[in-house]
Image (cartoon, rainbow over all chains, first blue to last red; front, side, top):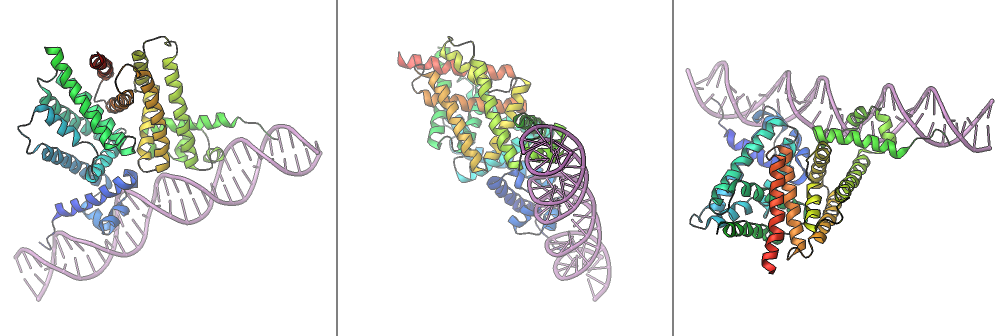
Length: 196
Length: 196
DNA sequence: TCCTTTGCCATACGATCATATTGCGTCCTT
DNA sequence: AAGGACGCAATATGATCGTATGGCAAAGGA
């Protein structure tokens, strides 16, 4: 067998170029030519590692999910003994575009969401990930509120909305975090009130 | 002067065709050719009423804002004497994709939001409308909660998130409404508790 | 009645896209 | 060392895009 090249590494390299374009100029600006140029490759090379643009996008979104999982894991790491309420807070904060990396990820995520609206395959994948996320939050709300599943959906919806406002600059980071904190507090607080 | 044609009506007709395409196949599927075909016109005719695609999109988004305003007004009509809490509820419900017309409007709105992420002109327009909306909600929360402006932003963010979940089918209409109701209740209720 | 203005259409143009094709070094295997 | 598989590039192909252009029918003021 001839020259050995790490396919996975190449694919990842291409994917990062793709994310850069998607974050700065939108997913609609992503073309084979642009990606190749951003990755410093020829178009043919990109084609060599991804048979089609769809395959490339599919791979990129799968890696995005991996990255979110990593981010969430990192966020929870080292606070295993914290109160469940703080774990929920960490999870939700990790989903907000509060630093450059998270902003890129969020922008790409929005682009994927947008495409999913007219692509049932992507929509199914999106719903699946969403359900997992909802379950993860609900799990940590167990005992803190009367209806953890509903509370989790509400918190996730709020987080999504806050993320949109942050992306557009309608809210500042401080303000978004403050809103989220207040909400988490109210939800867990009121349940205590209800169950007393 | 020669033949008289209602320009505004033509433009509106074209705009509705554009919305149909944007709602069913995304804003990226909107092209002069597609719009012309959907409106049953020639490409040249569309060009005759909109000098460029950008001008067409600009008009379409402006009309979208008008339509939202109408919808909100309609929703508030006839309940002038209702409790402020119910007015807020009506406002927020009117922003959710709960019927076909609202779904189309929401889809187009998402498409506009998405484009605004990489288009500062559109972003500015979006933020402006958002601020107006936030003020309208906050105004009706006056006296019901400690910090009406923040509460309004929180409710709008939640509504946006719920709308996304509804579009993708992650939440049912009943569930989204229930979450929104609970949130409105908690916000006004808890403030009473805080201010007592 | 004629002529200018307008509504409208058909088509052309250049750019950009995804993708297919072709070719050439280069390295591993035998 | 020879040959085939692979990494990679250059270019061709056909589709689709926004927009420009030229022409024709009709209508209303002169």
